[in-house]
Amino acid sequence: MSNPVHCIIVDDESIARDIIASHLSKIDNIKAVAQCKNAIEAFNYISNNKVDLVFSDINMPEIAGIAFAKSINKDIKIIFTTAYRDYAVEGFDLQAVDYLLKPIAYERLLKAVHRFFEVNTPIQSKESSIGESNDFIFVRSNRRMQKVDFNDILYIESYSDYIKIHTQNDNLVTRETISAIEAKLPNDQFLRIHRSYIIRLSKIQSFTNEEVTINRKALPISRSYKKEVLKHLEKY
Image 1 (cartoon, rainbow, N blue to C red):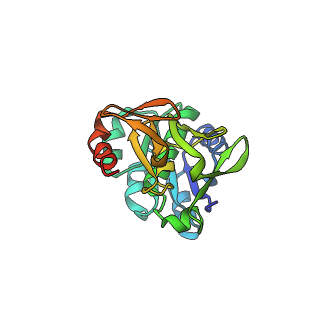
Image 2 (image 1 turned 90 degrees about the vertical axis):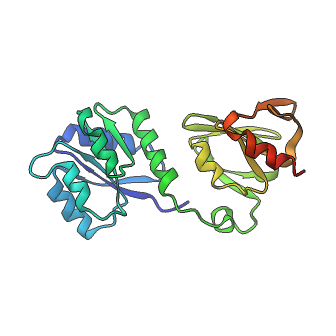
């Protein structure tokens, strides 16, 4: 598994910091390494430590969150947290990963973290990201890292922040976005046909302009993917 993302929480309210830290403690591969009550503390920490992501309040004393975000290294990503909607446009102008309104629910913060992973996880070669054999992947399911052979996968189905991997003999559910899992799959073996479905090409039993059938189940081809899907399938 890759090294965890190091993040800091910057907010002048201790309760707000504790809520974010509690939410983050439930998410794999991300670690809250510091809590800072103002931007000056955050500057000092960033100067001496590795930081990948900052959760920053906007309305803070002395140095506001927007000014703080403008002054740090651009490689450090920002997720703004605030009780005020008025700052959203300026926040996104700074290319913030997300903008969270207080009180922050766990599900909403989880979505922001997944957005960070999707945009900022380095795209590695297939060999380095899934192993030299290039024929399996590990996913977390039931508190274990489970090995899944590519050849066993029928299709992958998305449920918002979770996916279900349908295999020959079992189904695995893991907390991951479909875009994140798509980046780990070899594109000569798998094909995205819908925002909610990825299929294994060798498992196709039949297809039309509207759907693909795998294991006697019809899976829809969405309008936005149809042109590329049909272009790909007609090669066979």
